[in-house]
Structure formats: structure tokens, C-alpha cells
Image: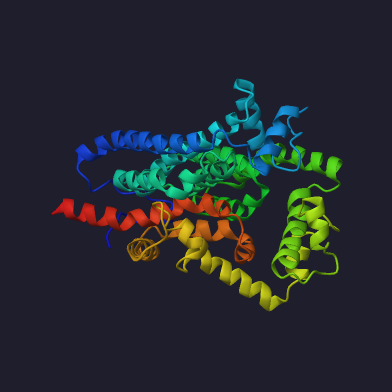
Length: 403
């Protein structure tokens, strides 16, 4: 497999594309075509769901954005998505404004996928391939108008990845980009600190930028995130109320009451949950207490392994919806070959560092995957699947063009 100098070095800019100059000029035109195609399919999905009521999570964001008294008055959730929702509702107060917002973010993800593929590899053909996969990826189309923050999570994580991995960026551009993307990521979900923190630390070491610049990233991000933590502490009694209390409580009840049906010492009964119409009743437990305190070490390791395997390697299950969902149907052997070939190509080639990002991005969610979580929770990792799937075709095509 051939390719440019290893961009993981962080010191040498990506080699220029092997494609002829005409294609490099045509690549932006191809992107416009793909953006138009992606938009048309997403508009069709919007038309299918526009008249339906928003789901529970989206409804809470809608109500929070309408009643917001100050910037950080956004309920238990991080504020960036409610801020954008507030702007959308200022333009049009109808609930469908939130559907337009998530649809816009879905189309923007196609464009950012193109930029990442092109700039990280120095090959416009890779950028066009990534954009093509994201434009037609059926699961992304299916969720594009659900008014969730899924696409914003994907944009924020990919923007951080861009600023960390793309070679040849001017130091100022890299660190301004890292500051903005890191802040956006944590203002969208504090859980993104798990993949973002090691990526930023790696960038500080690899690109030999001083601790002062790293302090700038951390300081500005902390200044923007801290008011959210203070608001949570004052309003709900804990700065990480959603992650430290609600998530653990929900999944404790989901696992032990709904799935295992065994109950537990702190669990409500199924009748109590049905009467309350909520999975959040009963004494609150933290996520750590739920995972470590209510499962043996062997269970924890096995569930984490099963979750990673189900998303990244096993055929069918959640991976069938995520990796193979390039069309409206169940996975078949042809798509399996396409995906597994792309992963192998990625791992043995010069761009293998990209594989670290989805591994970090899944993190503790892997423990919950075997419980049958909402499939949209893994969609922020879709651009990395698109990158892997694109590489073999791009390499082979460019090899043919050299002859």
C-alpha cells in the first residue's frame, strides 16, 4: 500500500496528491455535488418527520431554549446545543427550527469530512471519498432531522481531530483552532473530555508547542465551561449532575429492572417506574458507582470488550447499523468486505493514528452498548468509518493514475 510520508509524525506536511491537476481543481466541484445530494436526501427525511412531535430529549432542549434566563440556564445539559437552539428559535419559534438545526449540522459534517480527508492526507480524492460516504450514509440521513445534538458532537470531535492530526498547520492556526474546537466539544458534552484531553496533550508534545499555548487552550475552555458547572451545583446540588447522577440512575434501572428483571437494593420496582413514566426514579447513583459498585471486575471487563467488539468488529448488531449502514438495508457480505478491508488498510498504512480517535471516543459507552443503547450515540464516530472505507479505493485509483 502506498501513500505519502506518515502524517502521524506531525512534522512533515502531507505529500501532494497523485491525482492529476484537473482532478484537484475538480474536487471542490465534486464536493458541491455531494453537498447537494446529501442535502436533497436529508430534506426528504425532514419532510417525513416535520409534522411529528419532537422526541423527549429534543423537547427538553426546546423548552429550555424558550425559557432561558441567562446563558447557562440550560437545564442539566451542556449549553452549546441549547444556545444554538435559542438562535434558531429567535429566527422561527416553531419546534421544527430544531430539526432544521440538526439537518444543517448534518450537511456541515459532509463538508468538514471532506476538509479533514483532503488536508490530513494531502489528497483531494480521499476528501471526496469521505464526503461521499457521509453524504449517502443511511443512518446519518435517518437521524438528521431528529433535533438532537448528535451531529454537533460529530462536528466538534472531528474539528479537534483536524487541529491535532493535520500536518503543516501554522502554530497559531493550530492552537486557535484547538482552543475553539476543544471549547465547543466540552460545551456540547463534557463526556468528550475523555477523547479530547489526550488528543490535545499529544498535539502539545508532537507539534512542540509550548505549555503556554496548552494553558491557553485549557484556560479558555475552563472559563467557558465552569459557569455551567456552577449553575449545575447551585440548581441540582452537583456540578456534574447529569453525568454523575442521572446517567448512573437511568442505566441501573434499565439494566436491573427492565432487562435482568432482578431488581437491586436501590432499584424501584417496574410498577413504580411505569407509574412515574420515568427511568430516573429511585435513589440516585453515580455512573462510577453503577459500573464498578454493581458489577464484578470480570463483568466490567467483559462488557467493555463486548461493547467495543460490537461496534468496531462484530458483524450485525449495532455495528451493522453503524459501519455498514451505507444504504437502506441490513448488512451483506459485500459491505462487510468493504468495511473490514478499509479498517485493515487504515491500520497498516500511514494514517493509522486516525484509528485511535474512535477508540477513545467510544470509551465508557462501550459498557452500555450490550444493553441496547440508542444507536445514534455512536454516530459521532461515523467520519472515521468513512475515512477507513475510502482509503482502499483512493489508493488503488491513484495507483492506476500513476501508470
